[in-house]
Image (cartoon, rainbow, N blue to C red):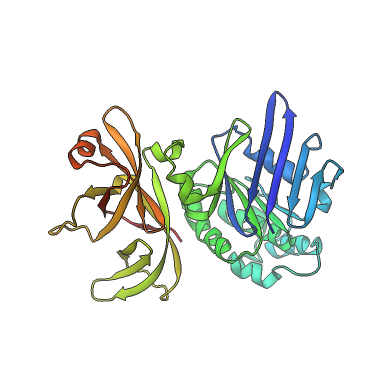
Length: 355
């Protein structure tokens, strides 16, 4: 089941004309600057913008096309807003029971107990909404959306109203959802750290249009896109746990490009993980370097080079079947003769485990 959208809307001087396709499962980011139309696009998909024209298809269901439009109540959409809406006079259990009574579909989907476990709500069930923290209220709102048995979950910047501490508490639950949910999730954000951590697929928006879409590692490392040129330019790699080094407190991860060592993570061998490697943490050498404190060195091939200011260039590196970024000076490029197709070695100073 994929999500296919090709929609047009003129509203208050703003023109939305966006087309994209998202995978059948997993998180897809709608990413772009504030005001580019991400939230409006979600509202169109949910059927909340009656003047929208075009097509919305979710799997084998057509929610909107030239023949007609399904009203919002007939679209199996779970919608999580920036600010959760809960019944203040009810406790958490009653708020969830209300969502369960409005459940749609054929009886499939996550059960009450499964949702409570997934979002860690057991200790909150007897508490009333006004005494919950912002992060706790958002977890309850997500649970309500899941209990409605949606075919598609829409999340509109669910972390934007939270402080950093609450974000840190909620993110692991979103990580778990990303691994376990069997439905597509469209996740709106303009925070690249959230997108890198949670999503596998990205739809990049600007001025009401879809600029491009695809695998997140591919888009983050495309030198014709602005994300590859920012101060925090990064690549997101997929790897698997290979071995534990108990003596040194390290875990060996493996991907097609080679091994990577990170501080120990207690995960079974073979567990899939996502890694963030920032461009500023990657340097290049012509030969493997010895006598260094850097543990991770990968054989790479230079894929592409692009200008990055008056004194620097940005370089895309292919490591196995995945891509890395590094930023080097023009002098280094000249002295090392860095050019597309050249075999080199990437020293990786820091690897962050995302999920």
